[in-house]
Length: 323
Image 1 (cartoon, rainbow, N blue to C red):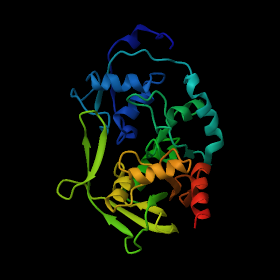
Image 2: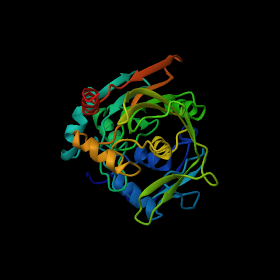
Image 3: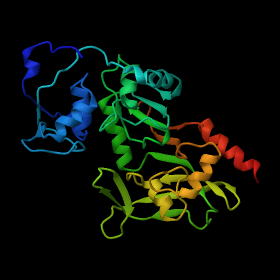
Image 4: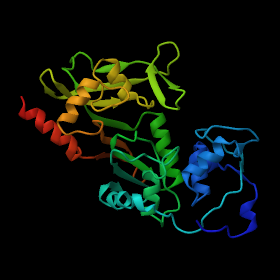
């Protein structure tokens, strides 16, 4: 990493959140203003309380408000382009062929399973870091939403702060529609087409994040379901449409109705997971197949689809052959 250009970079600095920064997560803001600083370091200084907002400690997920004063500790900032760790070079190259849609305001990319949406605790390099390396000419690239690390499919990235604010507003107003494909064990009851079950997120002592249904303390959460293809009593290919955006929502709601997402090691059915592994599947069967939104560039509805990955399609072919 390059040496600082001046002693000024070795001193505590204070920045004031502007109107354009309003609503942005603190960790994402720091990743933008501290270009060249690894996400791992950003989370480290946040955990240590070295970053303060209005003189107080806040979490990485704190959403900035215009006028907030942000204390930033001295860190070594690289003025050069984003460096791609050699172990992740193939991921960056692969993403070139996974762009589903692009215009002057946003990109929709087909995120592969196994790649985190962004770097963080214990994760050096995520999709957004890869995209910044792939688009060094863009001064602003931010995730409009997220997908779990083991979930593949359509993910929207904003190229402009105005586009990000527009998309966040669409998410809040439920204008954005997402359709996932998932394979679950057993025969799905056709009468079950909506799951309304409030969810609460818990942190275990190990630091692992778990989500569970809790009707007393949970946040309202709703997921719609459609049967896409049935494989007798063995499995059902489902379309899941989250109406709210809770962490692990589809995974927990599916498990709640006794049809856990196939390959889900956290909430899944062990016997079904073992069966899918015997068929050659070594990932979670959850894929963001389609996303629709109002394109900020044209103000028209834009639908983008990400084809089902070959390793998931191969499992379906085996199941079809057994019918």
